[in-house]
Length: 629
Image (tube, rainbow, N blue to C red; front, top):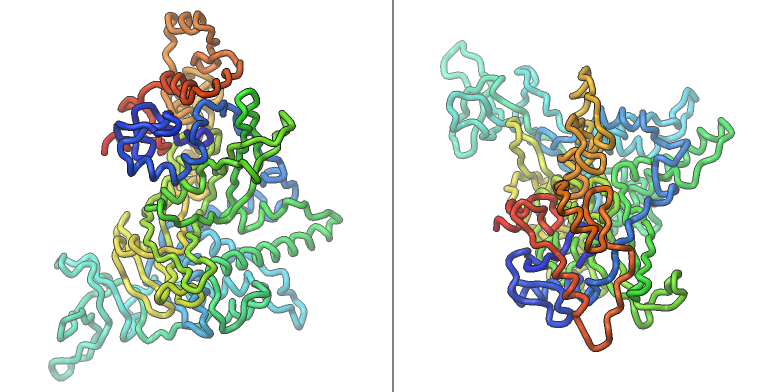
């Protein structure tokens, strides 16, 4: 079982699809499946590193990360909480209105164009922070220093990518403006796009006026100004990203003007340069006040604030009499996922990323508790989910035709909760992300050393809750269906967090409770999950709702008979009301009796009911998740 994550294997349910099981793992007899195909898939997605370890004591809780990895430990942050909250409050996290503007491809910079478009349309927080940046290089000197990279990036976004979607006054309309019709009595015309053109006079004394020519029509229609929404102008010439191209030598020594580069490497280089500039500028300010830059000040810089998350690795000794776990934490800004024969969806790739692996033979682990080199179980999990999630699908191999062309479906809304570790922030509810941009590498015959990058970005419409997608191929813009986007050979995926404790969503809901009095709240219910709760406490200092959000199950019933039965069996009632066995280590499995301990462990598991949390870790009830399939 995946002891460290919020996924779990239940008796009688398939460990892959959570349907009713009819088979067991032929090796360990501790895992259930509904078919051989599910068993093979589960084996390749991680069970081969966990087979026979279902009885291993994995109850050690994940500790709190070291202070050096937490932004709140920085005493002199680059962006303080107050300044960061100001950036959050001034940013619009919804998809952008209007028609996107293209960028001209010069010197094979399609990788740069695709990434700049994706960041502009999917990470509004970055653009908002750059707009509020005031460059300290610009001073009253007659010859001020040239602008920094952040100034150039902000200028490019405003002059090259920002669309003038507010042009709705009649005097602003220009010939060859492409507009969208709306709020017309003829409903069949609403949502149509056309080009502003001139309607010639039909009689003497009549002046020419502007109209809208729809595709397939011979003559333009006379449309009122208030029924037209500006999209773009056909005569506008896309501009090249010279403001960023001039920074190529500073972005990376390996980048060459005119060469074909990798979009993922450019993304990391761009974040690294942004961070270096902010830290250098912050160090200069601290030096003026005789203070030093803290070693972990980068946690409060712009890249970590936006894309930063935290991984935890758990390494456990497989000796039953020891079963000691060691934890290590690692920050991340994007996740690189493997594409294999077993990974059919993006969820499969995330399962493989968080799957347990076995350390043995030449890769054995030295246990600090028993001071011996032993076989160990290692698992990587997500401890802290980022506000903006970037997923890198590893499509390139070191060979001539090393491009992996397999299409891996990805969802428009991704729930990251099943891949969080137990005790992670936001584990009590779904951690959902909304897809905002996709970068695709277009290859030829599977060659990986050359190709072309395009981007798909999500845009808004005048109708609330209705969105559309655009294909951006350098200077060519085309509207496409969402189903077409989800069938692409994705290379980079950009998601924004929309639930589960995101700073972005909390700022969107901001100030809704201003002016209202807080109720007197019981114990730990106060502010749990960012919500105000006025229910009475039930168990563990939490009300029924908050208890279920934190523990993933309803609170136990306080039945005296149950308590006495638990005590009679040698169990001790815990603070949350559940009976807990004594802390003695489980007995070692006798040699030659495979599956004995696994059988007793699995028989103690309660079967999943329709109203119980789904074992997949989604945070939903079983009947509304895999039980409803």
